[in-house]
Image 1: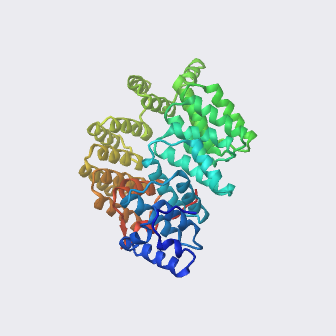
Image 2 (image 1 turned 90 degrees about the vertical axis):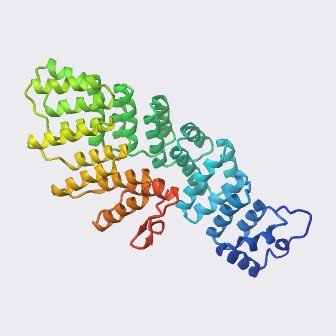
Image 3 (image 1 turned 30 degrees about the horizontal axis):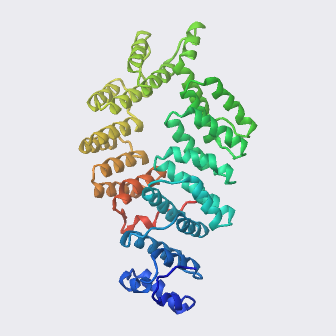
Length: 440
C-alpha cells in the first residue's frame, strides 16, 4: 500500500477506476506533466510509481517514462527495491534494450552499490527465478561495460551464493575484462568456478582463459585448459592454437627450438615473433628480428608490412606508415584492407580526418571496396571529433553499399552518437527504431 501525507488524495479514491487509469496513461503518454503533478501532490513519486506497478495491463513504457521524468524533474529518490521492480517488469516483457539503458543510468547515479543488498532485493521483490537471473546477469554486464570490474567480479562470486546461474555471454565479457587488466588470478578463479557451477562454456570462454594464462607466461596451465576443452565437448579452433603459439613465441621457446634443430625460420615465423614483441612494447627486439630477416635474405610480405604500419600508427608516426605503404607498392605488394583501415584509424586518432578521407579515396581508386571495418573506423573517428553529421553520412553510405552493420557498429552508434544526444537519421527514419532488440 502506498504512503500519503495528511491531506486527502484524489488518487487514493480512484485507484480501482479504469477511467482514471486511462486518464493517467493518457497524461503520461502525452507528457503533460503539469496535469500529473496535482494528481500526485499528496503522495510521493515513489508511492505513485509503486501504484503504477499494481495497475492491470498498464503500459510498461509509460511506467518507464514516469520513472525517468520524476528522477529528472522532481529529483525523486527511489529505493533499490523500486528499481528492481522496474527491472523485473522490463524483463517479463522482454524489453532488454530499455533495461540496459536503465541499468546504465542506475550505476551512474549510485554512489555505492551493495551486491548483496541488490540480490536480497531481487529475492524479496520477485519469485520468478528466471527473471531474477536475467536482471542480475545484465547488472553484472553493465558493471563490466562501465569499467566497474571489482564490483562485477564480486557479483560473479556472490551469484553462486544466491543460486543465480550466470550466462556464458556475461562470463565471457567478465573474463575478457579481467584478462585485459592482467588479473590472472581472478581469471583462474572464475574459470574454476564456472566448472564447479556447471556453467556451459563455449570456445570463446576457453580461448579467453588461454589468452590470459599465456599473457601471464603460465603456458603449462594454458595447455591444461586446452586439454579440458575436449572434456567439455568443445573443439579448439585456430584462435586457440594461435594464442598458444603466440605465448610460446613470446618466450622464444619455439624459435630457439627451431634453431637448435637446424630448422630455418620462414617469414611467417618472424612475423609471429615481431608482432608479439611489438604488442609487448619491446620495440628494439622487434627491430632486431626485422634486420635479421633481411640478413637471411627473407623478404617482407604483406603481413610484415601491416604489423609495422600498425605499430607506427599506434605510436602516432603516420607519416612513416605512409612511406611504408609506398615502399610496399614499389616492391610489388598490394596494400590490403587491413593496411588501409589501419592507416585510416591512425589518422583518425590524431584528428587528421582529411588525411583519413584521403586514404579512403586512394583505397577506392586502387579498386578496393571499403568494408564494414573501414566505415566503423570513420564513424568512430568523426564522432569522437564532434562531427556527428559526417559520421551519420558514413553510416548511410555503408548501408547504401549493402554492407551489414556489425556489433561494433551498433556500439559506436550507441556510445559515440546516441549517448551524446545525436540520433542518426537513415533514409529519413530514426535509427533508434531500427536497432534490433537482441536478447540478453
